[in-house]
Length: 502
Image 1 (tube, rainbow, N blue to C red):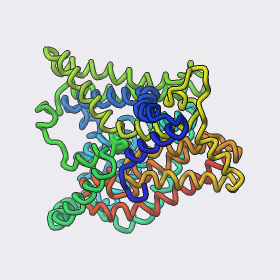
Image 2 (cartoon, one colour; image 1 turned 135 degrees about the vertical axis):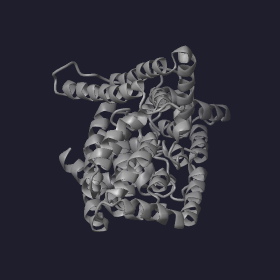
Image 3 (cartoon, rainbow, N blue to C red; image 1 turned 90 degrees about the vertical axis):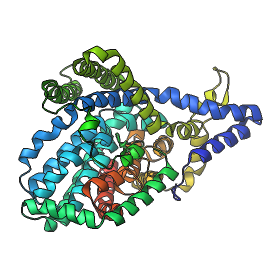
Image 4 (cartoon, rainbow, N blue to C red; image 1 turned 180 degrees about the horizontal axis):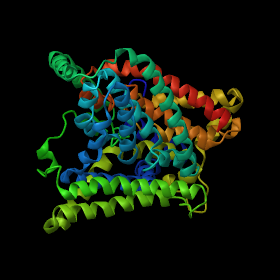
């Protein structure tokens, strides 16, 4: 991970060696390679399906042209640098929270970033706001789709909602701190609104195009070598869009989509406007129901019901969009979008399976299936045994343990994929929590923060941060350096809050 190399092969080899050392059977060891990924796929397939359905829905909205219409009204309130800073952050956060950063970056980049530049916001400020709000704050909690909390909770052996709730609080703390520091650091670079600022921005980007393209190419090459994933997500978006998850998809989207990529349908069509209003209302209503459920006003959704609702709503919206857009081709276009969604889901998340499989072999709940043991035999708990044997040598101080898990998450994110380290941080959280008398869900959420803020697209230039830099037209390495202090400060403060207040 430190060398920014892909860890799938080491994970598979480690799975093989672990199974062979336990069973002394080459047959069991070879079979464990398949079984580990199969068990991981069984546990995480609901996540794949949610990603596929939401991505398919977004494909239908994009073809109709409703995606741009959803955020176009915000242009009218971006009158100066201050309001642009706030609107850009809020819109990016909301889109990334519901759909991952993958669609958020090109949408915001094509529609709102030029407006923000004209209003006086500096290009580097634009890049920092979009990265912190989308790739960082929204993707690290992943509160709506719950892909990241699902992986963390599965590895830690705790409830998904518990991890999701704590991750949401921590992500907001990190984001608030990072945004505040960004405001203080960048405010002196803001200027009075002027149309000349947009021309200057475009001219400066043209003059430095060669350097930026070279930097993007190097970063993209590094990402390809390390993860093949987003961001993301960026999909989001991640984490991804990532991406994880999301980073590879996000880095591929550098130029804003033109009219042809929206299916040639004008944005002013009645149906596009209708769905541009309907979709936000549907998901806002869903979030309101979740809030009322937690308050006891309505029956609360339990277990995987909330995630299932996200996928079900996405499917229904997809059907409605396709039927309204092309009634005569409704059945065919719906199927095409679903296939595209499934392809994206496996591209974005497929890398997680063998990695998760290796860490699941250390968990007694899953190791028996991976090692082919009889159903009535309890599997070995390798990871917990390892931690127990070293427990006496570890400082029994919660804050040290929490910071340690945070650092592991940050290091795990250095490969540029937002979610690949979650099986590791989740497993460590489940193993270490008892020794320091902490809630494993809290430790898992802390590790999730480190992993996604690092690899999801705020701290490393070979992640989906490339896409943000491309739309803001700033050097990606400069953007990564500028984000470092605000993000690290936010992560440390959130960890302290998690240990002593959550």
